[in-house]
Image (cartoon, rainbow, N blue to C red):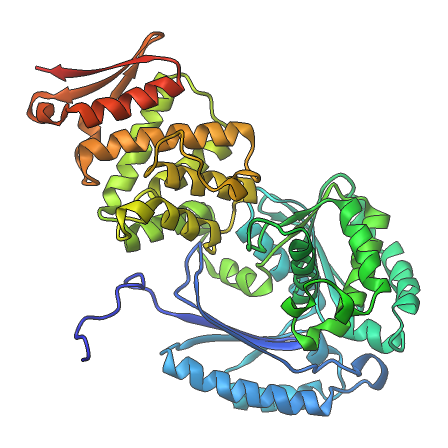
Length: 504
């Protein structure tokens, strides 16, 4: 039976937008729900075409790669039509830029996809990759490295400020060609090229942000070998020494012998050693404080570039939490009120928060009711799993663990042994604050039933000895044993006694 109701899993009043990225190794289509501060992909597909294979030595695009790319673009055109995507932006990078037959290919590619193609210069490619990192991290500070099949782009980022970027012919396919399939010979090529990259002199003691499929594949292998408790690539951190040691291993060992190699597409495996060579040399020369993986790059940078200045200033984590609050909670306005209610509680209890801690708490409040459709025994588990694996950006893994744990504790006693695997990522302070926020939320939901306009009338007051919940006279029947028990559990976490006071 066909339902007359439109799907409610999508945000209203958004027009989908698609970006097609014609890279040296892959051709990818990503369609997004709309142009927002926290863009959410609704479709993602790629074909490993190897367009740039041989360009460094022959000067021409790979013929077989051209054929595969054109077929992929024709398919992407149909997919966009099926998704009713009218806003399609197509980008082409190093292979099409450097090859003698690049112009002929771009004309055929434009006809295949049915849209104009923007051929990026190396400098613009580095700028868009850097803007992707700016859009996806909270106050980034370091150097962005976007490693493709044909080139490596580098750009400095400080908050939302970008430095002038550079492009170097150090992509995986390019290195494979000029080194004649020798990672050892590639080391010398990379070392000499990076020695002249003045931008890397600015990286010491700061963060190196890795962008690109080859580096993400390396990080996926590293993550699998560690049995890491999260399956989220964005914001994955690798200490430099560990990253350098792992890169050296990948350079030395046949890719198919690596643990968890099945997580890497067969067509990308030959490039792993060359990506490792570049990463190891960057670490050796620039001495960053940490290596951080970014799932966002030039495609998201293009979306960010198209936003208004006001929209760029929005917090993508909070925007994503608000979207899920709208899509999955019983009352989105209640989530907003819970932010204000817990603001007042934190202030009354004189609990100091950093700016980042406050935004994480607000995100947790907005997400506190997203598991309500599950069976009561599993609501906490479902909320935790949704948040732990959601496509959130602008949050590191400890912060993500805090939000997930707080949303889970909202359904469970603070003494419950929630997700031991996830708790290993959070700090002791975050664990304490997650339990505290969960306990406060349990009080809030007991009096509001997840409905708006109740919490503003029922504040928590705190003295040195006592935590008091004040109820107006018309809400006095809510003061039962269950509410008293939840209030006592919250008071216990802050070392106070508790009472419920009826006003009027």
